Image (cartoon, rainbow, N blue to C red; front, side, top):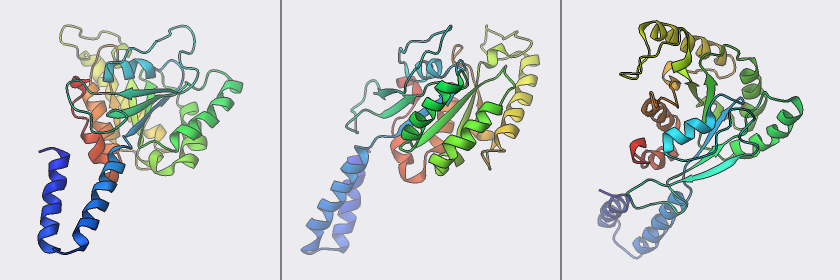
Length: 254
């Protein structure tokens, strides 16, 4: 049953109890609020230091074809991507969801200061934020500082629901990924468990209540655990907006 049908059924039940001159006015108000809500599609920010694979993550998750640079910072300013799902009618007016590929930080002190204001403007209007880190890299100080000094003061509710994506798990020691079945080797799996716990412990210092199910190990290039990452994004959406993001469905259809 589509969303429009649910509205019709709900209004019919209300009409049965509230027959009278006030019903038509109430019905018009409900439909107006519904249309207003679906026109404001979910907004997701993909955040992280330079080189962790934010753009690659978006490309793998949503079938986009954004430019990826392996030598210099690829994203100089927020890239807004209106994502439309293949093979379905778009309920919202601007696509199924809006992504922001945020410029990477921790590359240059002057550039970081410029980026902070950009982050504040975008983060203030987002429903979900995915914080991407590199699995092989144990350094988390810059991530901690950026969350503490920029994200939390700008949108504390968003910070409390932050999803952490630990990318490049195929490259963690001893770098012997099982490509035949696309899973980590036994040695990598053991190290991955320790890495995810380390990331959670360190980021919990600036993201109180960060749970294991919001720290997802994945590989954008190998397309490993992308569905788990997307699922965590769905669960992190605030309750009053979650139904819109759930309406996007399975990432395989993007």
